[in-house]
Length: 257
Ligand code: PGA
Image (cartoon, rainbow, N blue to C red; front, side, top):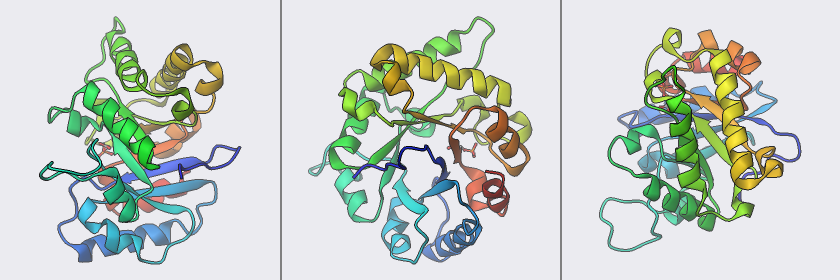
């Protein structure tokens, strides 16, 4: 079943652990810290995306209802001769409900828009809830970055059926702002503008009724220093947090929501 937080859109925080940590022991410690930090989290859900190899063990540990698990990627076929890949049904079976699709670090390794679209479809077909990552590599005064983002959205969504687009979760992650410090992240005003642009683009492609149901999260150097102001002024429905999600700063980020 796809994630549905009811009529009122709940904020979402995605913890993208990337290829960290090195051992299951450390993974359990990070998970336990996150669990403690969600104790007072009332108006948001947390999705922890560890490396696939830790999913099954972590998802068996006790956790409150507002913590879910997700995978960082899937392959578009469901089984077969695809050495090294992991399918939607395999991560579902390991406890994931969500999956990050089209992260810029995967795109940088050669993942095309066409592959992103196929993975998105595979997520929907399996019942996983995808988080579709989009974002420009650089900004320019002429607004070409907006065209770039529009194109990414178009290529990912056009093969999908309209019913799949309802409630779709986007993670807007400008590539130039990933893995830096909060000082180098995007400003809340610029985020606000881009979120409006994403919603407008979805409206053009699928209708305004659908555009009103989507969530747009921001990702790219979210730390406790900028989380509150992005939440207040960025027009976002939550965050996708990378490096800070495995650090002590994560508790402060969650508290700012
Ligand atoms: P960051 O990563 O928070 O470390 O910038 C975000 C992401 O790449 O998902």
